[in-house]
Image 1 (cartoon, rainbow, N blue to C red):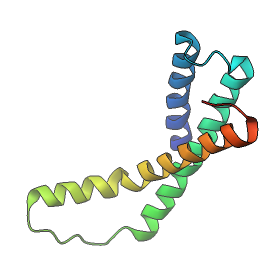
Image 2 (image 1 turned 180 degrees about the vertical axis):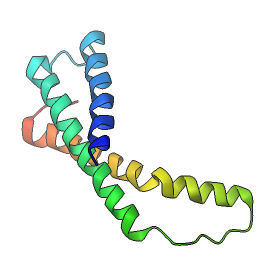
Image 3 (image 1 turned 135 degrees about the vertical axis):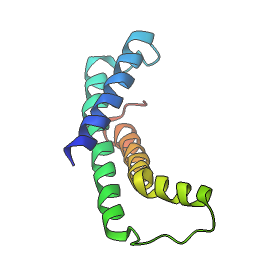
Image 4 (image 1 turned 120 degrees about the horizontal axis):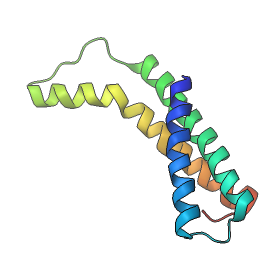
Length: 106
């Protein structure tokens, strides 16, 4: 499960560096950028872990499809779909936390 936090940390490190160097959010300042990195990694990583737990609980034992393309789509979805959905929900939670609790508009 720690790999999801590493992935989220790398994504938010890139996002934080991009925001800092391009000057797209000068109102954030140092603490806003630090909060973006820390809480973005935390919320998105937790969302990915919840998606993984959901995938493990609901993953079907066998998939019945009518062709190779449908089989490929189903295998790709069950490989990373729930984690991506969890990451998206975690990102939305991060946005709400930053806006409503900390008062930063990221």
